[in-house]
Length: 598
Image (cartoon, rainbow, N blue to C red; front, side, top):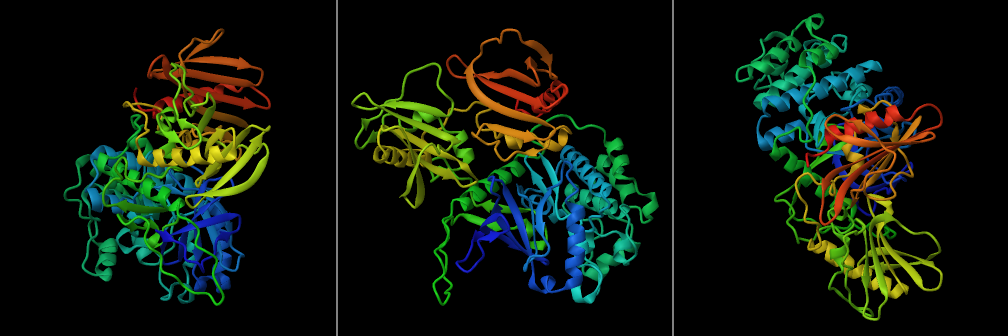
C-alpha cells in the first residue's frame, strides 16, 4: 500500500480514491471511500483490456452476474462502470490476510479452523453457483481470513479474460495451476464441480502448508492435477475424509457445496475463528489501513506535471497486497511489530476513539485561555462525551466519534495539517471538529464559548488521544472497543439489508435498511429494569422486549462496568407493516452468538 502520486486520479465514479493497494494481472486496485463513508476496493483494468471490445462485453456480463452474489463469506460487488474510459469495479473492502499469506506467516491451520474454513467456503460457493457463476480461480490468494470468517474474492471476473490469445496473451486458460480442476487444466467445459475440486486442494494447503499436486514445473503440476493421485500425507484424518471426494478426477463424483455443508454440520459459536497469530495479522492490517486513510492528499500537479518521491509515513510497515495476483477486494498489510501504546496512534481512527475514555482526554490538561481543565466526578458518564470545567467556571465539552454539527457552518480552519470544521449555535457556543477519514460524517469535536478556544482544546485533545494515555481500562469481554457494523453479518439474518447511508451517527451505532430497518446500539449506563418489558430468551441471554406500534426493541446488560454503569446492548426493528419482533429476535440471537463472553 502506498500513497497516490500527484498525477493519479482522485475519483472513480462516486468513489474518492485515497491509496494504491496493489496491481495484478487484470488491473490496479485502489482503496476508495464511498459518499456514505464505506470503504471499497476499486479495481481499474489494465489498458490492454480496456481497449478490447470483446473484453468489455464479457466484463459487463460478469459484473452483472457478480452483483447478484450477496451471501455470507463473499465480498460483495457494490458498483461498476464497464463503459468508463478505464473500466472499474468496486467491491466491499475487507481486511484480513489471504489464506496463502496466513499459512506462510503462521503455519498450517488447526483442524477446527480448517473445518470453519470449509463451512465458509462451501457456503460462499453455494451462493456463487446459485447465480450461475463459476469462480474458476479459487486459490489461497483469493480467500481472505477476516475476523469473523473467510471471504471469497474475485468470483466470476476471471472469465472476462478467458478465451483467446488477444486477451490472455497465450490463448490459454486463466487460473492457478496448483488449484485447477483436471477439466480446467485440459481446457474442457467447466461446471460448478470444478470449484469443488479447487476447494479440496485449498483445504489440503490450509491443513499442511502445501498443495496436493506439487511439481517442479508448471507442466508437471498440470500433469499431476490431471493424472496423479493427490498427496494427502500429513492431512489430519478429519480433513482427509472431507477432501478426498472433492479431489475426484470425475466431476460427477464430487460432492456439491450443499452436501459438504450437510457433512460438516453446524460449527460451534465463536468470535475468533482463527489461531491467535492470524488475528494478530488482522489487527496489524486494520491499523495500517487506518494509517493510510489519514495520509494527506498530495498537492495539485503543476504544469508541466512533475513526479515527486513520497517519504514513507509508516516506516515499520511491510506491505503485501492480497490483490497482487488478481484478487479483487482486499489487501494484506503487515507491520514489523504491533503499534505500541503511546506510539503515535491515529486520533481520528474509529477503533482508537472507541477505546478512548472522553473523561481522561483533557482531565488535568492545561488549555490556553481556560486554565487546567477538570473532568466531573460522576457515576453516570456519557460513554462518548465529557464536560470539563475551566478556571473561570465555564465549560468545554469533548465529543468522540459523533455526528458533526452543521447548525450554522463557519469558514473552515486548519490544525496540524487537518481541516477543522466550525459551526456555531447562538452567540456563545462554537463547535470545532475534525472528520474521521473512514466516516466523514463523524468527528472529534470540542465545544466552547469561542471558536478559538474550541480549536485550541481540540488540538490538545488530538495530541492526548494520539499518545494513548486516555484509553479505557478495558476488561475481557467488553463491548466498548467493538464496531457493531463489523459484529453482525447481514447475510446471516435474511431480513437485513445493506448498511443505510444515514445510519452511522455515532461510533457505537449501526443500522441496516431493508423491508425492515434494524439498528444495533452499544452503550454504558445504569442497569435499570424497564417497566412493562417482556423477557425474551436469545440463547443464553434474557433480553427485555418492548413493542410500540410498528417498532420492536430488545435490550439487555452485557456486563457490569465501572461504578454503577453496565454495558448495554439495544436492538430496534421498525417496519412499515406487519410484526417487527421476529426480525429483532433473529438479529438478537445472532448478536448474542457473536458477542465476546463477559
